[in-house]
Image (tube, rainbow, N blue to C red; front, side):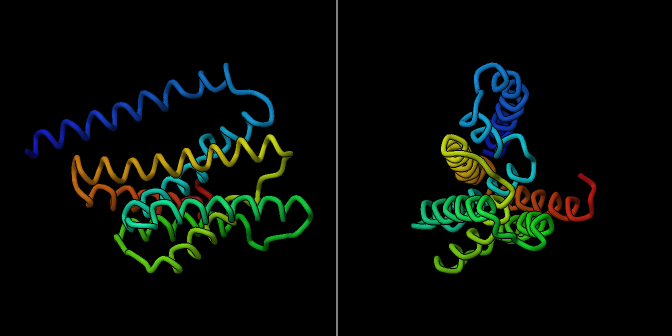
Length: 191
């Protein structure tokens, strides 16, 4: 049974690696304009990719209505913060907040902490606000960004389910630890 789980985990990781390697060339060839820019933003910016994956992982860990309510809350906060920035409302310490959101979301996943739904919604909304604040664009950009954010969060949900079944919940927690570590490195200015 352990051998089957190891093989499945290796296949999933290989598929993710192959997809990540081929995706940049494909995106440059087929995704253009404001919609394409918004769509690819959550994928090509490492902080956004890790943050939204962590939101998806944590939503999967919490289960129940969190599976859809946390992603909706995160997306709503991304859009609200981005539009607020676009009309001139400033968010102090936005860069540090982005790094802190990785630490918090990754830490929640790493520790496997489940939260009441209202607290979970507030947590992902705060994280989403720091991820959305840096974006500005027109309606097509926002439509693309919304699609990209939901795709990455859903990838985190799927990753939570696949890793939880193929290996164990411990592997999902290790992914959260990696996101938290990336947040610490980002806060320290390493990347």
